[in-house]
Length: 379
Image 1: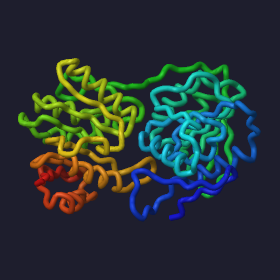
Image 2: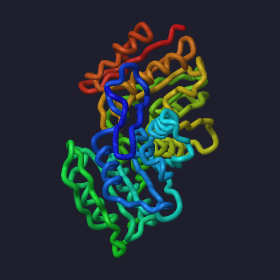
Image 3: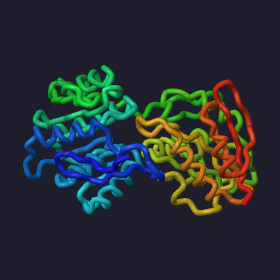
Image 4: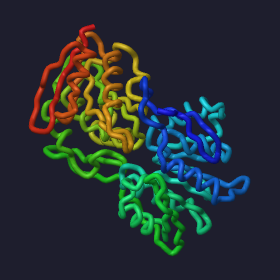
């Protein structure tokens, strides 16, 4: 797969993360190309114009527009790391792009806001509400996405929270939406984070906008929670890809002597996990919360138990590359005799990867939709 993006701003080498040998997927899509060409052809940006980029997948927009010193907001740690990598690969200074997470917005007014439509409509809603104070009637807002990711609900959301919209013609199955601020619209308060009470407990569970199954307990997590082990001998348990932290929360309850470590690449997920754990345990239990690329920063042979419900998609791309990467990292981080517990849809065949890495697996539980498997690190 060619890894060079050619657009009006120049030609750039771009990489995806996590890196894979013989990568078959590009680090950009036709919506990125359409957006960059439109910025170059239609917009006359003055020196000092303030630019904000939201949901840049792997830094294609930030790298191509780095001359404008944009701010880039993302909920993805991998996206931010890919942006840093791709700036370096193209000999561009890292400080030419200001990287920020999705829980805040930079101060001041922006002249141009470029938004890639996220997979989750709730995240777009939260972002638009946070953006409102930073827009004026002269701010140009352009939303880009592949047509399949631009349902009518995206238009309705933009018109409700920003103002009137117009659309471009389709190009290579991509489309742009242009939005203008209606200063007469009342700015709504954000509905996020949302909360629900975890069934069969008194726990109030808080979920930021980009957290999976934020309104209720999903059936996969429910099944996993029913079968989590009690490990009074465990010193360190990792909730890997923790989301809102429910698995680690219940693991802490069942293994009272353990320190639980919550790991996710989503800033909103880690914020939710921290809020939920501290609401239940306060300062009584020790825990760590890490936004990162899986277990890359974890010490070798440092965990007794790793619990993982791997994502099977990265942004809008479905695949097993994230899961396989997490399994490999887990093998390095487990102590001798340590266990990796994985839940997944039956058709994903995670057990075949675990057999390859650990030599064997055992089935803990299964139903018509999910299977929970365990692999032990023999050392």
